[in-house]
Image (cartoon, rainbow, N blue to C red; front, side, top):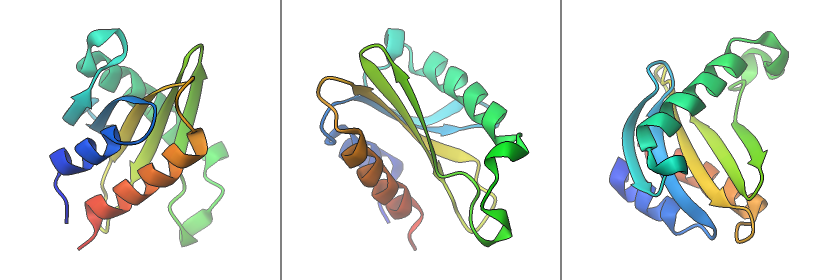
Length: 127
């Protein structure tokens, strides 16, 4: 099983990625970061994205999977010049972490980034 630093290093290899992080969404604290952060501050980006995740996670509107599958997989936020991609890390225990990518919109392929981030999240929890 790859460690946090290895997963984040692999995330930085995704085309168009400017920065990456593994974040605890209950506290908004980073468990690891790589690359750049929006406005140069990984901690602020973690806290801001955690607020978004908390807002989505506490609303039943987005829980359409029922009890058979994890409710939320990822969130995509588009902004002028960038994408913010959040992938929930689902584990056997009640993990409340997510992988976060900040992507350059002109260089990134959002579909490829989502696929690679899904693989990285799965590898992070593989036994």
